[in-house]
Image (cartoon, rainbow, N blue to C red; front, side, top):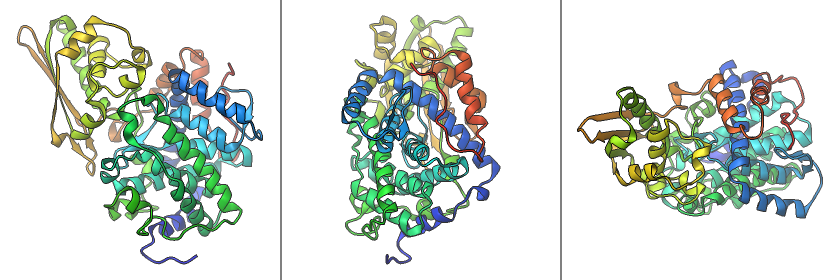
Length: 459
């Protein structure tokens, strides 16, 4: 294989090959365990919420059959590793409660962890190999997609799918202990197959998990092809016919390569409290804070005359166009609805995705106005916030500004938050003790042991 110093894929693959578990700081390992725990909570939520879509896809997978290699969440039988990765990623992204990253504007764990776990189960890999592979997947995704934003999004592509395939291919090739050439071939094979349109945030949102699922499946297959010695195109990123030119056009090479191997981007990624598009989260946080204050003063939602929401342009493009959602999928992409529910209930949960006629919700939505404030987003400094102002009928005004929603940066979730999230996400499936036990298993991962699918009650 020939490449040169301008071949960023080569640089990334050399980094991936050299990374080992002993190179990882303790805090990065702990952080990764937390993201694994969150992955299971998000997956159970997606299993519960996107039921009809999940059923149709799983029926197709079952009809195809195949060698029993890897497990699927809450299923007694096993499936081919690529299909298991596909279905598990489908679940993980199904409720939009999975992790993400501001710079890359996409989700990572849903596809990276699904693909790595499926292959690890079949290969009987050790956790000391699994954790570095996951970290490699996050770095490939966040650096490649992050360097391509916002042009990637503006061209209509969903980074979760188009960059996710490359990330999963790198992570799976790392897990298989391929050399740098092998990882390079795996990523290049995946680049040829990359796909995913962001049109799924406009309608039929229940189809959105397909992008994460395809990325996971492509990653597994690409790594297995590379393991068997299949050569792939050179310069898969920088070629005039390569990934960057096709999906982005403009590339920030500082995001792509700066501090590679020194800064692990899984630490720059976020976790989510709410089952909705991340662009709604600062709005929900602000609404919850305002509600807590006005309830203490004796006000109710019936006293609200106006609700003013200021957010950055990308939030409006993704989640500001649907004011009166008719489906759970639309509810996940409606700032109007999420804020109304947060003002009424003091939270926004999986139960709020069940759309029911509610005059109180309708009244708040009809009194809500959303406007743009570009100062509320700065990708490089980590700001992605919202300002909510509630005007009451007596003229009283309550306002809150949230520059960074809960789950990001210094405002990240802790193990107790993850335990609470797991309990909430699994409430109709698991007991509280069973939910806590999943978090315990993730927190106490023994890196010297061989991977086993997290034990969850089969239903």
